[in-house]
Length: 271
Image (cartoon, rainbow, N blue to C red):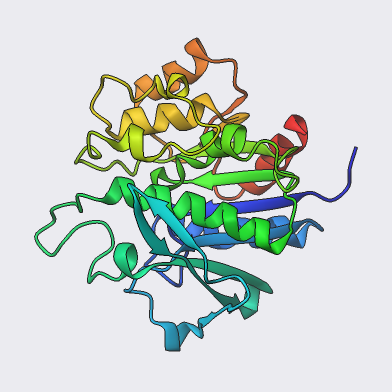
């Protein structure tokens, strides 16, 4: 059995760049703990405009920036920034784009109305991370996704990027949290997320249904190698979907003083 594991963490939030939350706090300390146990990690999150670049000492990585990602026939420039968490001895990479992330709020406007293009933002974020990893020429053993904004990554890894040397042997882990969104994604989401390798038949979880939190989460489950219950309580129908309709290894909720060891054991079990 291999001694060191290369783990790619993809998350919608990490503290201190964003306020503390269940996801943000776990994704701050889990990568550090995995690294401290002798493993190699990379961590990615969106560069929301609420993140203070000067205070957090973000800077653009020119050699990784510059490509465009086409979504619904529109080019969107991909900008990569990075910051260091000195206490953790780790770097965090940020996916940036003016169209999707330069807003006064993160997921909803000042009136609490969720952005109509949140679905498109998940597409840009997922593809932006994977294209950046290709440029880094880094080959993760495990890709661990946190939060619904990362839900497309398992699908893309298993089909759009399955032949790429960086991802050919990567295993997917998806953590489900009690972080629902309320407004379903646009009706043509299943069309605009498709890229080479992603066939319509793979999208049964979101076909002919409102593309809500449940549907997007089931899509992530369908293409993951293992699933984790990240929150102490999640929707019962999602637990039933995992345990009754799939054969995915499922790790129930783990307390903060235990999750690192439990997660690493799960990583090892699927490799």
